[in-house]
Image 1 (cartoon, helix red, strand yellow):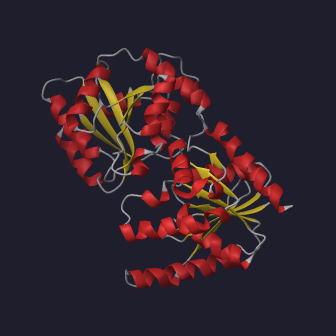
Image 2: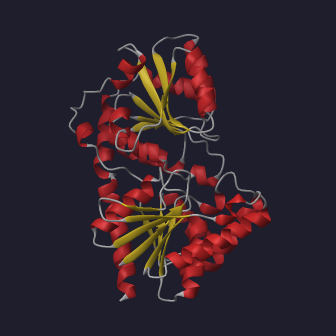
Length: 390
């Protein structure tokens, strides 16, 4: 099948889109990633695995920012993507904006099949004003049944879609969690063996416990609470260190803190191929996404799966599915409340608890939840969609 995998970003860090594209290409499909143009990025790429990237330059991108000009830009995007994907048999729509483009494309070509890949609880995404959320709810309520397959990233988000729109419109969803590929180097480590990368890089004592936050440095990720928790901890003890590894709006602030405080360390983001091996040199992974909206409350963050694939226990906020997964496998603990004091107490508890059982739980979870297992769900969904084309 000819598949257009549409993602409305420049496609430089989107690991979910990358993994899905590789999987579909390996399964014999002809896949093109359709993305947005970006500074210094080629418009056309041919990847060694045989799939392509086509980035779309938008002339109206130079217009001033406003709702009216934003609508003009989106209309241009619709026209360009429809023209570019005319020969596609399936359009894989990453997030609701791409799904809207898919609906227009399907109106022009009734044979086109749509796969709606909800990376989040779309109508509850934080940062969107209420009027935009209302529009998303209306679009999904009115048109979601036009999707030939619905892919979801967590069980709670799938259930929320069924409750919002009814089982008639959301009759079947496919759970495809954003778990990484296993790293053979990490898998080869014995149960008690840990790499020493962070200890060597930051000169952290062997007896200290290293907590790792990796991912986006943005608001509502609980980073400020973690910094305050470290202030509470380091006033009384010297055996807990925190590494922040990633990129984002708070990057400069975290770099300054790392210069000032010996127990806080900053590490720039690393490439997808290195993240597991480097994360494995921490003792505990942190998932501090704040449950400030349903989208966050129901999420299963990428970092959660990266930690368990790295074989390290997880300390998480009380997110519904994340907490459930950690308890199911015995792979970590959840904080009682999202406050700096609670985080500090939870880190002390982890510091004073032998980690062998939690590490074993992380390895059990990683053996079952990884991209090869999630890819089977993706391919099952595509098999059903492809069968309806013939």
